[in-house]
Amino acid sequence: MNIVIVKPGGDYYFRADSTLNHKFLDYYCPDAVERLAVVPVIYTRIKKTGKCVSDRFAQRYFDSFAFGCLINDTTGGVSPSMAVSLDATTVMGMDFSPIEDLPQSNFTLAVNDISVFKMGEVPGIECFTNALCAVTARSMLRMGDILALELAPPSAIGRGDTLILNTGSGSRSIKII
Image 1: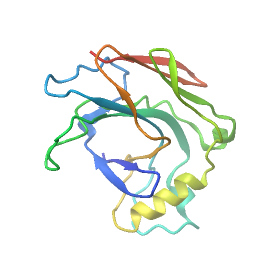
Image 2: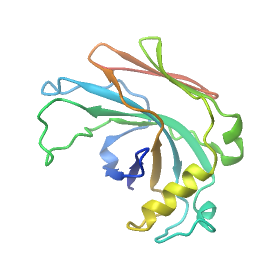
Image 3: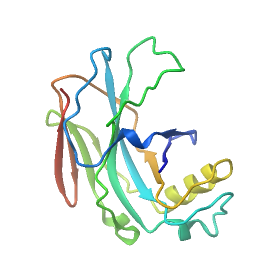
Image 4: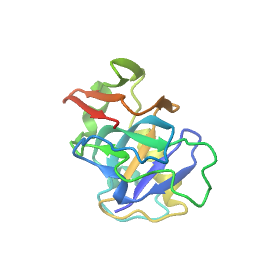
């Protein structure tokens, strides 16, 4: 399974499936990591394999969505050859809602009960359509892959902080230890 992260400008990168934290377990930060950042995401699961998908057919490749967050290593001086996405840092609960519910969805991300992201304008289905077309122009997506779109710039977090993800289906928290 690939986890494809699409940045607001359209650039994308892949995260290993070892980064997936789908049970909202507390995150044990490695000693060498001094600074972290959290980024809210909306994501979908790809339901069929595709490459060079046109926008006309893109909606055949997904039918649900969910919200989560990414925890990134922002320690200064990290070599480009080193991983910046550490194990258990892709927080995605896999509790998907039908894509038709997207216009009524809400999502907030808080750090220590202070909101760092609140869903303003709800993205349309086009956000997934455009991202899927852009990614498949160069890369193949397979059934079961996750396509995630960053919703906001990163917010600084650190050891001792608690992340609180609140969606229409409930609230979940992760302690950074």
